[in-house]
Amino acid sequence: MLKFELSAQDKNSSARAGEIQTDHGKIETPIFMPVGTAGAVKAVHMPELKTDTKAQIILGNTYHLYLRPGLEVISHAGGLHKFTSWDGPILTDSGGYQVYSLANTRKLTEQGVIFNSHIDGSKHRFTPEFVINIQRKIGADIIMAFDECTPYPCDYEYAKKSLDLTHAWLDRCLYQFDNSGALYGFEQSLFPIVQGSVYKDLRVKSAEYIASKNAAGNAIGGLSVGEPHVDMYEMTELVCSILPKDKPRYLMGVGTPANILESIALGIDMFDCVMPTRNARHGLLYTSKGIMNIKNEKWKNDYSPIDENGNSYVDTQYSKAYLRHLIHSQEMLGSMIASLHNLAFYLWLVKEARNKILSGEFLPWKEKMVKKLAERL
RNA sequence: GUGGAUGUAGCUCAGUUGGUUAGAGCACUAGAUUGUGGUUCUAGGGGUCGCCGGUUCAAAUCCGGUCUUCCACC
Image 1 (tube, chains in turn purple, yellow):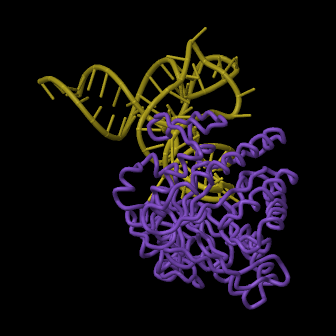
Image 2: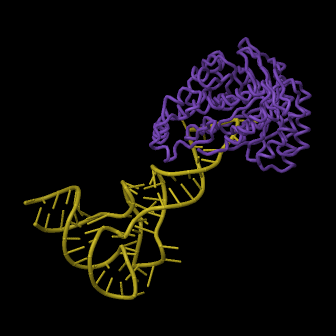
Image 3: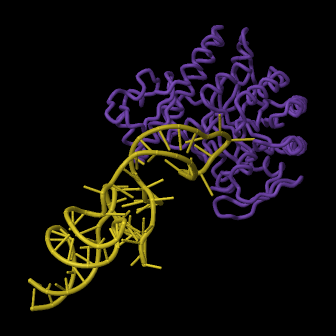
């Protein structure tokens, strides 16, 4: 089981700085985890991830990896770390979200989910037990419980019923986890997931239930699915007040740079989101001065560096006009440069947040930063 | 030279029993995207319908002329 140590607790907010120790290395929190769905952070080489973006942990996805290349390939390779050559910590999402967002036809029962692959339409069944078995074979350091991510909006009755299902599935995940072992000689930790849509009583009930399991870390799911930001923050704050302080808290799928800073202030330690990489591929860059759509015509003849204050080498190596051209031409290099930039920015942002928490200056810095991040360049 | 075809948005093309401010796809200009299907969606700008003339209440559409491009034949 991974170890979490709190290094500092902010006096003016619930923000905290900590360290997670895994068998594949240390993670300094708060942390952003680049998403590498199918065993690759799109458009970014592993060495660049480590040395240039300063990623400390990346995500993989159970649903995608199970469908392709399949468990046989990954287990023969000796697990996802060896298969991908990423030797740092990995977290795998359980596939609960993908079943909700991707699979064409899905049938939810108490037993599990039957769905059709988005790749070839073939029929598959995920149960909590099976999903744990898959994640044992993939071999990530942190694995996630199989949950149902409720959509938004979601009526109270459905959310309540769904929550009961997610809790029942959690118990089965925990049982399977406790009665199976890691396959590749290093430990794995299972994170349960709080659900409950935007209903306070359901979130409280779920957070208390999840807290009682005394897991290595805890996650909050079912947010950032279209609900207003105030709801997202309210639920996050509420759940954080209940989840144990001495365990890392992971807010799944969040978010924009501002979302991340606000959630850090509420007590979140871990984040993942497709925004920095997906939006990079479409030319949306995040910088310390605001958001920049590099495709905009106004950059056509701007030969200044992409981001003169950026901390990635691509920021000064290439000009705005060149990157605009690459993205317009759909050159792969454009995706690569923009992805490196955005990831480096996200990881700089959480690192800076950590530094400010450690030095006791977090809150005023956050307020100033959130304003800047909303600017449009 | 003769015969046939062609010309409508930046590109490829729809659009005739003549009938409001002429359309589509792509491109372009913007916006969206939150546990990634290298995705998808939304909005916008842009055309004296080759040119000149005629018929008509009304012409991208019918008629005459002219030019462009292409094909075939001589």
